[in-house]
Image (cartoon, rainbow, N blue to C red; front, side, top):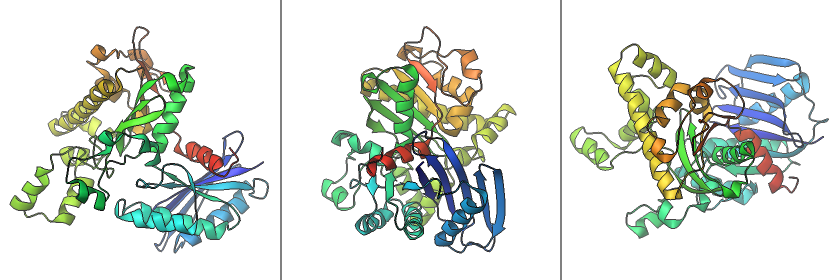
Amino acid sequence: MSAVLVVNSGSSSLKYRLIDAESEEALASGLIERIGEPSGQIHHTGPHGDWEATQSIPDHTAAFRVMLDAFGSEGPSLDENPLAAVGHRVVHGGKRFFEPTIVTDLVEINIEDLSDLAPLHNPANLQGIRAARKAFPDVEQVAVFDTAFHQTLAPEAYTYAIDAALAERHRVRRYGFHGTSHKYVSGAAAEFLGRPLEDLKQIVLHLGNGASVCAIDAGRSVDTSMGMTPLEGLVMGTRSGDLDPAVLLHLARRAGLGIDDLDELLNRRSGLLGLSGHGDMRDVRQAAESGDAAARLALDTAVHRLKHYIGAYTALLGGLDVLTFTAGIGENDARLRAEVCAGLEVLGIRLDPARNRSGSHEARLISADDSRVAVLVVPTDEEREIARQSLQAVGAG
């Protein structure tokens, strides 16, 4: 039986999952953290349960050796589950990559060249790719790009209204992110409803510490809230989302903030954290319920922004069949789902309170029987989607 190893490489971490190529079941998973620090942390879950260890892991090549040792000692055996492909999550593919791509030396060069668009992600993703090519020299490596699903955006959806020549020279346009999740969830929603994907107008809300909205028509992304970077759009854990660009000019002139200061502000000290002092939605909720006015405002601002996008994207799609919540907050925060949907009856959205409160790790319907729009909660599974696309890329899917 063949398998796909899905890898998500961060600057100091390596997350992986071994997936059966036929059943799509997870055979094992793991997380290696604190790469490059004196004491690395290893967690592997296999057929014999959880296994943890601590040791020095100087770089990603060493992390792959540690992972292979874990498979060897804790299972499952890679000899009994030979790899059909290694699939890599790569955050930014620019406009060059619009489908899962077999990694070559030239592809590596292109991923590196795009690092200025995703300096926190692409270099780390590339470290994982290079380490995997060393560890598995006879196995095809496949890059699956977060931006690829959004390559179907029309020019009027991805174009920013600035000097066209300047924008072209510096690759300034909307790219969108979370594409692997949006693709998986929209397909899973259609399957759950027993309706053809091509017949549905959908909005998917990927709500985690990073969050985005995607308008999907017949399985194709037609607009999305994140832009050239993952900063634009919704109120996130530490990111501001949408902002008048003149705010940056004002802060530079009046507060004396430089480029690095502004970057730090918008990406790490804004969003829920900037408004309430808490970057985790659960902590914000608890503070709000304890009477913290700043936390209440943070929640209300996040909900307001979500309603804004749902209304805009319903108009853009020319109607709506399915609204789906996914990712950590979307899947688990029933109160946020209720707050977002409250008042959207004019769009045909009506929740069933009992269905919305029911806890489950499965896809489920949470809208009322008389709701014109099916409102769903669908757990995302980006690793499974990467495995599917990797198999397709190597001709085994």
